[in-house]
Length: 239
Length: 82
Image: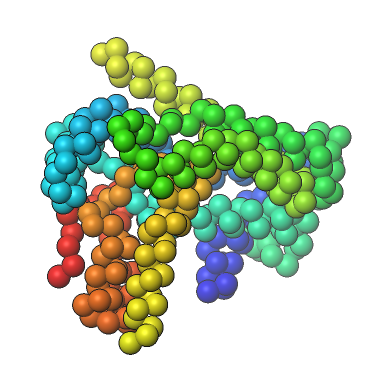
């Protein structure tokens, strides 16, 4: 299992990183980390963008979904009506475990590359990839990526906060639904808003500057992606 | 026999306490976008029924197969245990 993981994900990503370090001016590993993160994010873009689009569409169907929920029909009938509604509006929950199962290994591999592979030991490199002549761990001449970095950790937390702030909120039904789950979800959502960025900050600080830089980059990418999706929705509504 | 009741209890616990926090967590970190299930009944409900009907081994296997069918291109949303 760990062999497959090494061959399919870890090694290729590590080699791309080594290649990037060798072409980036001054061998700045920080810039290579940012570029590699962006490459992976763009590769996953079609999947993530389609699910964002379908989420936006679903949110616009919320009033009708609410009606179905409050109609008092049996659960099975409700499910049938819901899927029928999706069909009429030509949408589909672009969702599923598969999306999670595809993304998690890739994201973890990237994380491990930045955690362990950052020194680019030549043993892991393919024969056709030359070990970079110059490896500069000081990002932009200021921040040492192999050390803990408070600045990068705090930036990771802040970018995480804004990334979550931009995400579309789930619509709750107002009428008499004080189920434990719904209340729990609501309070969890409020707490997540402030606590998760703090956890991310602590985590990023305790790991390394390189991982924090990866986290910041992927958050900024996600923020941009959400803004792009929101703009697309506006033009979609105007038509 | 005992294992069967325990596993059903475990699924009940998952459904009542863990399911929503896990999906919120995945959503927060951008791994899952739509909170709506692809299937009715949910995979946990399906697996529970499968364990009751076919026993623990085959039940878990059927549940696992159901999870693999949960992808964006799935067209048959109403999917009962056979």
